[in-house]
Length: 456
Image 1 (cartoon, rainbow, N blue to C red):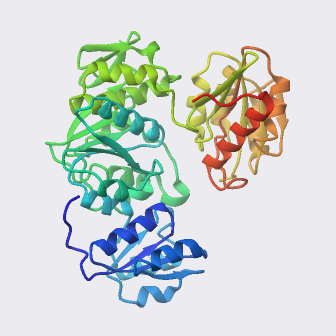
Image 2 (tube, rainbow, N blue to C red; image 1 turned 90 degrees about the horizontal axis):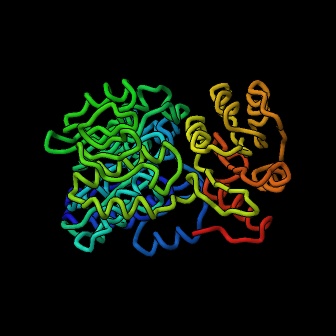
Image 3 (cartoon, rainbow, N blue to C red; image 1 turned 90 degrees about the vertical axis):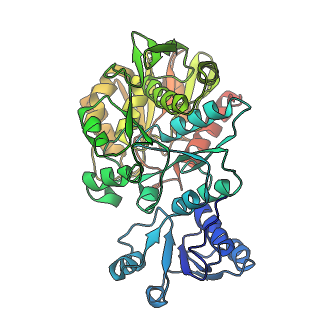
């Protein structure tokens, strides 16, 4: 852990009692700060934990008066938008606002690899960590938006260790000094515009991952769209492309079904255990980061031939009477569901729907025509999803209360050889607190229906 003195005797407000906020508050105390923690909801257990460390706690609201309390710094939960009244007041008066990821990057003095993108972040982060950690000569951990506190993990690592961090656009907005040696951008679509307001704002947030990099660092980036190539040129780092469409041989790429690293064959793409073209892209990104870190081909191949996927991200659940069940609850946008559908040659019974964010689903129509034999819709946007399915002439369109009740309906519509896929194309918040709970409920429903346990 790097010695950091800049927070000594500083008055710091931590906003939000998520995992990152709680760990940030405790870390700041260790770094000598005078810490106040605030959350709009009451949480007696967390409050007791924080107060035991000498932290002042304010719950039940976000009082605007806090902006007049003389704080030197705000550490904000990434999910709290900048137009939230208290945050907006801090912004207006020029109080610095960071996220917990910034604290983690400041105290970590080892080898930092950071991953961002619209889709594929978690799978790519996990693959890199597994490749780096495969050899006993290295210790590698993952943290960040993957559900593990960046700062908490960073505290326990040495300068010889590797840390692979998944970073969302929300986190990256508050990381002014973040400096990964290897940064990875999997892709950039148009996500979270309700938060960022414009696509350019979203892109700029993503590019914070490379803002402090120099030519001695590396930016690994998807080379398969002209826009992403232009985005790469905004970085000062050494660019290392990866391409599934064989658009560059300067990094990792696929050509005629073979995976290469700078001209040297690594393995056959068909031998990657993860299904779908999107996971070939994720593997290519991970290979680039791993090779830049000195990982042997044998370790890379072993990981890619055995790793079965991250929970809720096109996760194979189980097979029963010839039906294959997949949990892709993490697909909270149209592009992710398109990618999921394109990964299957078998007929798909799709379970989709969720929070209505105001958009419609015409972009899914071609994929519905090619892959979907039946669709079961639910949630706030079910009528819009049904309209797209109708336009695509999906043979069977049904409604259900949610993804749990949709499971037995899907079974009745299925035949051996079919895929039953939860890939909602929408956020979960109309019916579930998060996509993880939605996915877990789906898996439990599949287990109840089949009498089998999900495969590890």
